[in-house]
Length: 189
Image (cartoon, rainbow, N blue to C red; front, top):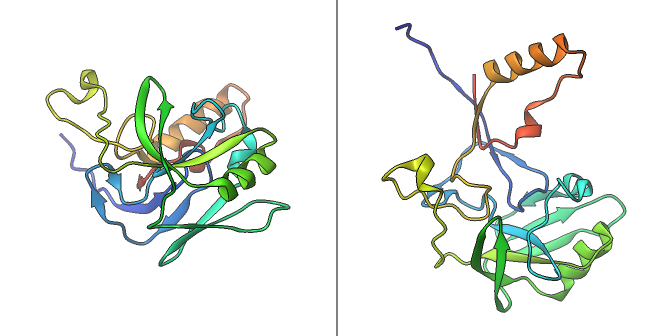
């Protein structure tokens, strides 16, 4: 077997599921993955999660993390400040096939997301007392907790895999994609 040198190239958080990411230099690893990763989520009027798959404009929402708040910016919108340690009322929401406990982040956040996305939405925060586990068919005996991510606490990608994908896309006449398309937490080279 060949020894392969692996280098962590970059580290990323996606505080709001399906919104822009934040490149970071260091992160705290907690039970659900990187602290503050996919901690918030946008839901429709019925409490169902919404993503870029249905609402591509979500990709234009760019968060920054401060000491006490997350600031969200989007084209044509005033900045929205969301406190890191304040929530509003408890609620139940759906992400994939799971119904989970969450906290609604209030009417101001709901209006901001609704205005930008053009439909009634609410911003919710994952309830840290909730245990949402990855599917055991993939984790075996390990109970891998995650917050609002699609299924795993950490998402990993490599430059070599992206290069191979882009080589294959090129052979088929398709445009290359960049790493941001895959929204990884850890990018290895």
